[in-house]
Image 1 (cartoon, helix red, strand yellow):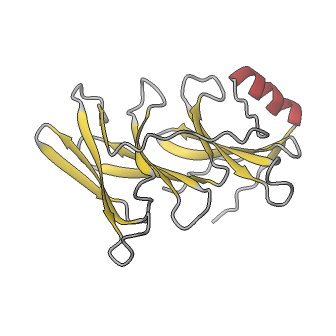
Image 2 (cartoon, rainbow, N blue to C red; image 1 turned 120 degrees about the vertical axis):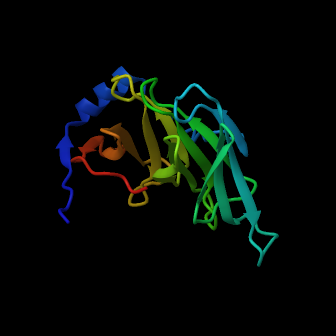
Image 3 (cartoon, rainbow, N blue to C red; image 1 turned 60 degrees about the vertical axis):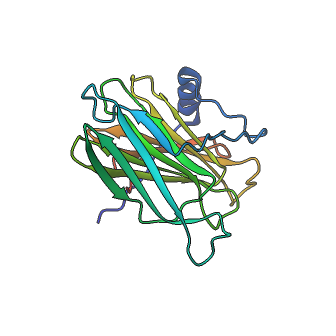
Length: 213
């Protein structure tokens, strides 16, 4: 496998990108996203004109029911009398988890987001994206933030929203210094496009690489 080598971009380029796109972070405030933890969601996931009923089915861990952890969770979608299911195959939080409509463009089918605090960690938050084509649920992307901060916004003003993930820079001052990783949906796949350091003011623009589902 070829190693992905980042290409260094001048800090001024990132500053211009931030200014033009509205991408702004006040890292001093350490603001966190409010999540509603919905266990059901209605959206037209395959854009066929019919609203789908999406449900996140959560079962607590049998060995430690007092823990806020789900060992077995299933994503289920109902459309036109048919039911489609996909097991998450990983732990999520029981109380602090739910579903989100992640729409990035009118031309692209919306993604179903499973949003949860990361079990067995102090602050991490994770977002797992699924797509639905009318026949099956497919896992597309999993991202984790230890800030935590995950935002869906159009960074490069191309009409399609991106996902920007903030992480703490533990090699410097994690309370102030951060890494901003941008994921973009290109040619039907989520790709990790760039990493920006608030410490060095440098943007590492990555060669196209598919992000892990």
